[in-house]
Length: 612
Image 1: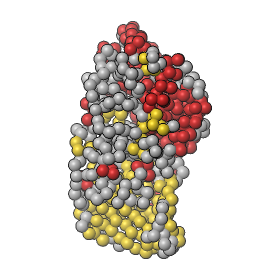
Image 2 (image 1 turned 45 degrees about the horizontal axis):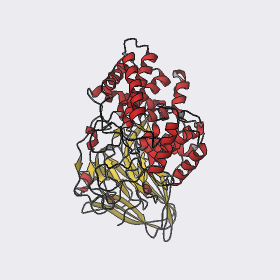
Image 3 (image 1 turned 120 degrees about the vertical axis):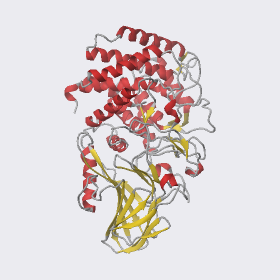
Image 4 (image 1 turned 60 degrees about the vertical axis):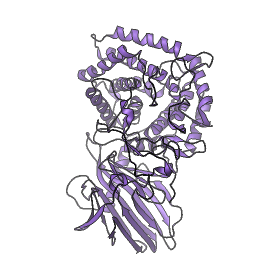
């Protein structure tokens, strides 16, 4: 069996876990009891050992797939030898409360409706707990089947047979017949509410899930540039937000390769702080203030729990796992090793502080709700950077090499100090050592201009006194370190576009030796950030053309992975939150077409009275 294209997988979410559905209709990725749990279906990473929930219609050709409008409900049309069927796949959700606005039903629903019959339907459910380490044992329990050792149960109005860890059925269905398969995880009730009690009503499951997603999407009144893509990306981001804490996963998968057949395969089922402010601003701007508040609280809880240096990433519940290799999986298209956990948690990345303080300032500008205790936590971290800004770090891209004076890290330390100064003013804190912070900020700014900028190249560089390009430097005007029309910024845009391009619309994040074999693809976040940098620089036509090219490279369901090869092959974990977040930012910057980053300007002008 060959591997489907990475961006061909559909993404389903109940905000507690996610499922990925291959183009042929097989669910090939599902972790329980949550996003970062044990993968019970992992055929995504091994065609033989991984396990899957397969559903096929005899004689069907390529399947037509789409999301129902403003939902994460997948509709697939199968045209078989003698009939046609439509399958609706989703993870059930229901409206929650302010603490959990969307509540997970912990139920994967697969509903097959025969429009023209007869249709021969085949179903095979093959869970393999432990990331494919062992088969499950199906046992009959009343009206449903339970998979011992996998925390799964299955209920279906089909004649199922258990055989060597598989549960399967093959039936002929007449026109007008609808069958529903319910796969519950973590002892979920069958009504898809996540709450005890209630009877299963398949149509009610569909209606309630669609209504929940649509009610959420309807909060946004954005109707500007690329509004449809922005709304879809917002849904993806919401689907990647953990219901219990508001944390944002970078992606719901692990070890999808940055190079086919290579070893650059990482676990992305964690929260990175590198775009904390951007996420918070986007949530508020698109009408999702409650989610913005929950995410800020999660960030501040992390700040409170880490008394020394902040880690660049954290688990969705505030904990992290040690990195290990899953040796029994062959990896996507032979890309090994398959990793669980992420060693980058141990790195020193000073840019983290800038992202968190930037988010805190935006939050205070929008809501005025920061408490004295919360400011005390943030103030401690500003002090840390005022003391340690001269030290080297590992940099934003987690290169597993020596500590260096990374220019992006210095810029983001400047952001930390600058936002700390501004927050002290907004909060009326007369005891904060603002003058010391200001001296450190200004000295750092001068040092970056002196040692982080190469006059011959007319560009900022990756680390002090180097000549290496680094796409993260495209954010210099986006965070206000220099104006977008500064000649040094314009030179940086042109130099990086030229040196990092792998195709007309695609740029890498760097080309420096990172100590790993092979090479990665273009980094889609950086490609969209190039759009924003061009828009702020007044080069709107170039920015619009680049944005259109990137939109044409989306997967068939409008989803983006982390990276892309020059020929358009999707690479890396999927779907990637930062790619969709950068798409939203680029669209809003194009919509504003101003000389300052649109989201920050909007936050400054909105004020607490307008926060929803």
